Image (cartoon, rainbow, N blue to C red; front, side, top):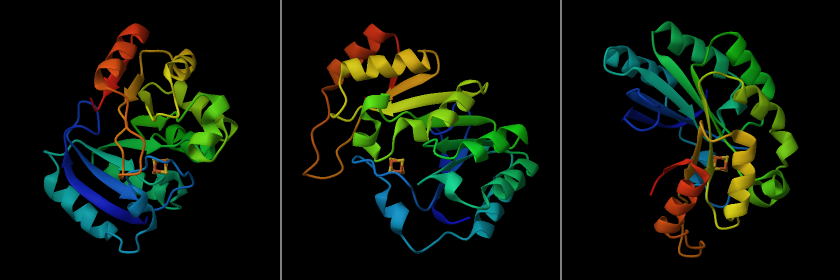
Length: 213
Ligand code: SF4
């Protein structure tokens, strides 16, 4: 598996678990707010064996491993790595953009994943404008993940989106497993984020949770 970065300990990436986070290399979307673009193109990889050795040493402290990206389902050895990590006693969380329903289906069927977080980039009518792909490219994954017991959907509140777009998304996802994430500009040329107060108000009105404010 091509791993561009590895965070040894995180308290915020896997709900209710102390986790290590693996960032795989490469992505098939092109989101304007991506903070991981460097990871998507970098050539120096983290040795998979170093990760396994670290996890073996931290068993008992680390409870789970988050496989994030980039887009992890582009990695041909994703399932093998999930299997290995699970066999060591860790839970696995997958972060995905939802473009590979076949792999997601297999991970669930083979009990290789414990929690799945999928980005819902925009309502269907704005999907391509935001990330370069259509909602129909992720719709099958969306439906699979929605019926998986431990899941979340999340949206980064990029200014291309407005309150009515978030309402449209919540109508699809429901409120229980949904998070609205504050957008953070990535450069001086990036559009400014919405005021925190207005994001909080929107979340209160829609009865949804938020992160990053
Ligand atoms: S899907 Fe994620 S990793 Fe890929 S471009 Fe968008 S924000 Fe970046």
